[in-house]
Image 1 (cartoon, rainbow, N blue to C red):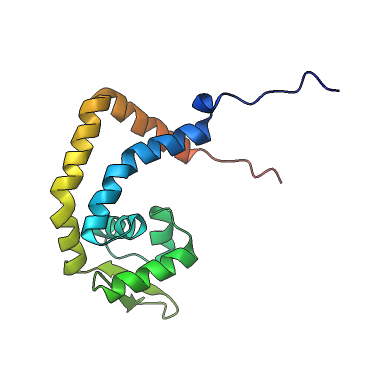
Image 2 (cartoon, rainbow, N blue to C red):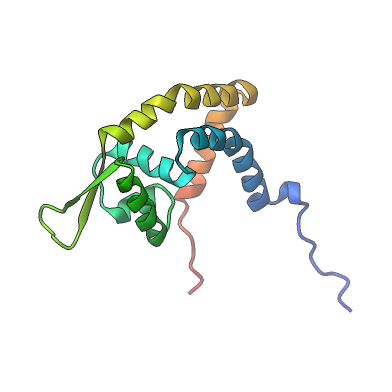
Length: 151
């Protein structure tokens, strides 16, 4: 019997679990705000990306909002039905679509911006501005890492 089997780290030192716990700490209050606004987390991300970046094709929206393309397709249908996004044919490639946020979608963001800023201010105050900035820098650096596919 192998008595030298490696043991996994405690869950409080496991990066995947720590990231999930941190996500829940941040997203809990935001979920309530979004529920009151009548949108899901995923719909909010799509609207925020379009508001920030302007008109995009679905592949770029999926990438920037951390969604799979099949999920984005359903989300865009819902948002279009709510009048929050509009589709148009790509100007040079008719096989592609361009998605843009509408005034209704922008208004939803504006209507919830004060609460969103309040939640962000709470986090910055509780965690500390320097630590929060460092955490965001580290997470963005982690996201930018190239990964060996093991092929």
